[in-house]
Length: 42
Image (cartoon, rainbow, N blue to C red):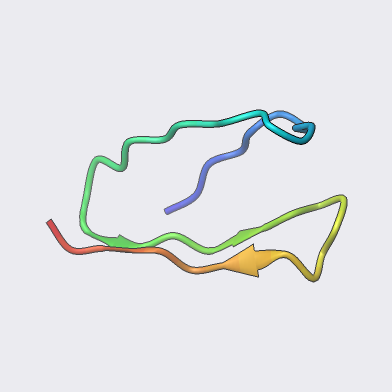
């Protein structure tokens, strides 16, 4: 599962509603050390 958001500035927000259970890997392409892995369970 993946999605792409636009480049963001401090205070900006982005919403994404997953449509299925699974893991979403993400990484900031501007700051590659900023990453995460939310897990959707229901």
